Length: 396
Image 1 (cartoon, rainbow, N blue to C red):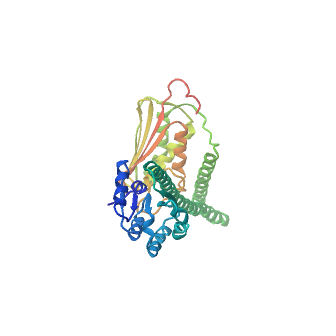
Image 2 (cartoon, one colour):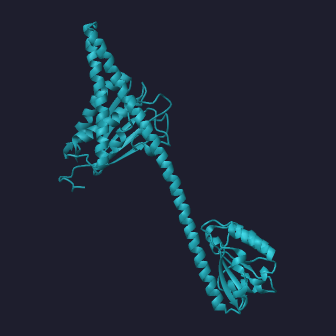
Image 3 (cartoon, rainbow, N blue to C red):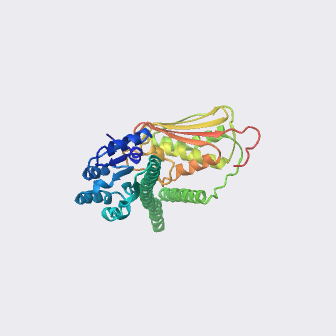
């Protein structure tokens, strides 16, 4: 028979080797809704204790073979630290005081001495009290198991956080070092004075481009710092979303064309007004579209759509790029994780952009969802923002 923790807490074992004492005891308990199992010897009782039990009812006659008591004592000592099985010891009126039961079974035994003759009511009351005590022990066991699972989970989370931090610092160093190396290299070439005019202009353009990369990294770090400190400010106004989305798409068309990616859009004629921070919503659009282009190989497409959905405006950014693995999908908005990733060389970036986007959208009372059917199947990010209804929403 397979036992559960709940059934083990209610399991009664009876050892009364004289005559019909065991059968009478189990029948009495059954009449009062308590199922008990009779055992024939201390050795059998010890084996059953290895399975588990709620309460043991044992008559003093079972201890006539003092050597067998050692088997029971060892079984009790092998119990886990939370487990103290109640032993209802049935002895005679004079025997209970003199019988060295506690000495024989050791400190690990939780013994309740019951003197015979014993009334039915007193016997059942003692049994119920022992069962309640045993149930509490199993509750403690459940709590200890839960704490152990929590400790393992906390250790796992801590290990992941430490690894993510280490990876982030390594990535940060790489991301800062690369543009700095480019800047230093072009500056050395400019200082020589040997560059032709066209090459000098290209050097200045490359230096400017590298400083923009570094500025973007610093801005992301500052944004995350403000978010963590609760100081990220949202300055709201009535914002027409349609022209904003259209302008962001237009901004990225040259980058998409340069990468061989087709960037398309679908924007309605109505402006779709939102009570929002225009700069922050623009930042959301930049991040989502630049990510989509970055993770889409040449020949692929990125489609941006804005539409009304009831009282909300919905922005969809869908690409045919690398997609997101099922393992990563639940964590794409966590700090320091890359948005998408497949088998190609990892893309640059600190993995902060989507975490910032998630915070900004939630700060506007909206939602953002990432969708993907897996690696190689592209990805879609869906933003939902409440539309302006004629009066600014209440703060918070």
